[in-house]
Image (cartoon, rainbow, N blue to C red; front, side):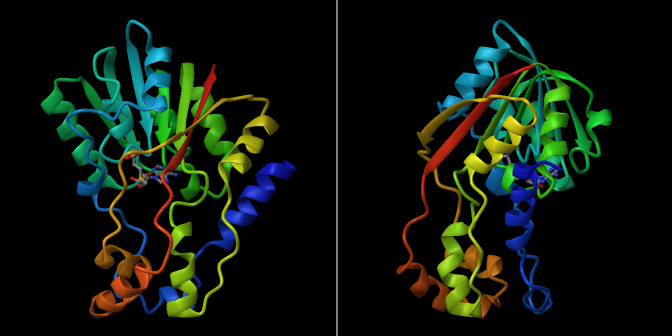
Amino acid sequence: MGEASRRWAELQSGRGIPPEILAHAPADPWTHDPRDFRAPEVPADTPSRDAGLELLGGGGTVLDVGCGGGDAAFALLGPMTRAVGTDQQADMLEVFAEVARERGVPCATVPGRWPDVASDAGTADVVVSHHVLHNVVDLAPFLTALTTAATRGVVVEMLPEHPMAWLDPLWVRFHDLHRPPSATADDAIAVLVELGVEPEVRHWQRARRHPHDPDWVTRRLCLPPERSGEVDAALAEVPLRRRDAVTLLWRT
Ligand SMILES: C[S@@+](CC[C@H](N)C(=O)[O-])C[C@H]1O[C@@H](n2cnc3c(N)ncnc32)[C@H](O)[C@@H]1O
């Protein structure tokens, strides 16, 4: 394993929830609600969408890795001739398939963990993977499989640091847990460079914020729902969640 891959794995592993806290969590703090990830009717006009459209040109197929409800793939409606979604959370794939049906796009879904399911997913002209890298510990095989699956190129979208890093002050407050620093988008780029890939990097600001109401944050913090009021009060004191995002594009 290269130096950058090792650094990424160490930073990511360091941000796991300690088992003694997890053991007392009343609900799974990790699982995403598919309703929060349904692709919008009108896609956001973002540098990631531009990058996907550049690669698609007049038309082509798209593989969305860690697809959720298909935000990344369905932003490419028009030139996209077929959408394949893969996700380790099966209920996300139901939403992905439903959106494809509603929007009249031929579609397939592949349940499971990337890169384990890469051979089932096959290849596509364009591979997109948005907001997944911060979930991954062993990044090099994940990225290599994205490259191998794409006949034209790959678009990755991510936040500059772990999407939950803004909650670090609340881990101190509620659990006296001081979390190590997050891996960053620059750390991910270093892994790509180690793999011989020099991505084009676009920095921008997101208009939309993902949900972070007190009930959602309470579950993330492994606290029982009755502490939601306390969490709400504490949230007023932490800096607002950052809106900056990074798009990485590489041709294959
Ligand atoms: C934050 S959501 C992003 C969903 C969607 N890409 C979007 O931008 O709206 C992350 C998704 O990646 C999935 N995921 C995380 N790690 C994965 C892996 N190794 N293989 C497949 N899916 C993964 C999760 O189940 C979740 O649906």
